[in-house]
Image (cartoon, rainbow, N blue to C red; front, top):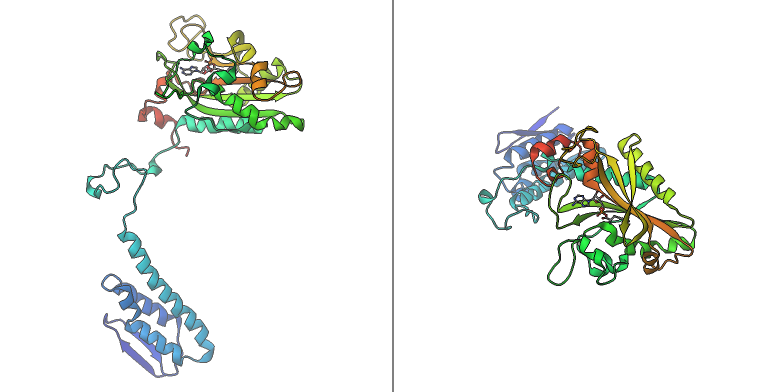
Length: 366
Ligand code: FA5
């Protein structure tokens, strides 16, 4: 067999035989030669290079049965060389992180160093809120999102606190100058949920919805009180619904969340939006029964977890529901307190502290 050789500027040889047979090696060698020149030449120069010239010549003269295969390989090589140009162009334009805490035009060397996100993990509250939502979803509840700014109607009026009602003062939260309110509880969502889901009742379906959300209070802070914390609101409305259904629902949820039955205490309480109303407490896991100086429960041995009750007829009416036909219950529990009791976290202030020592104990579960 007779061989021709084509000398390349790089010294790499591309060869083809006189009867114009080609082997895959021809294309591989051309590719290697192009790769070695990639950094010193522009893509359009590479596309006009002798390596491509030789391959095109080969394409013209190759036996008919080889042309299609060779054509595919030459085209693939050309597409690859063109893609080098695109990759280079992408590298050249520095992406702008619009969420970064610096002005977009700050030069790279002046930007603060950030930790790679792969080093982080979900915050323990986010993780636990996902678990909580999952349990309620399995129990048949829809999950809805709360909001972080609300108005007087949803905070008070729709919840049976008419203007001037003395109980308004018990909900001391933050307000904007134009009268908007940082919600002191997730009950601000009750009226919206009743209106959104009341059509269920027409087809004998209950209203069953859970609303996790961030809440705010002007509080004296201690081991179990924060100014910013989370609640999970629950609303259930149907026919012949009673307090027993409420207690059963909460015990089922807590049994699933803690993986065992928990001791609970239910005491009568007052909320304008439920009647009757109750406070629901769990035993304090941070002290012994004879201990009176516990910083978490203040020696009471019970930690109040939630408020609950049968939805007041005025609240049902305001949501467009006839209380003569339908009744329902609602609850609102503190997420931080629940997570504290499950994970033995003795101070609520750890959650917002940003302390890595605390956060790392719950890391690694993205
Ligand atoms: C309420 O917020 C009512 N909206 C609950 C409710 C809903 C009653 C529906 C009836 C029907 P309360 O103020 O008790 O109630 O708060 C409920 C729970 O939120 C408390 O039991 C506690 O777990 C949590 N919580 C309240 N204040 C704080 C705080 N400052 N820091 C952390 N958790 C808190």
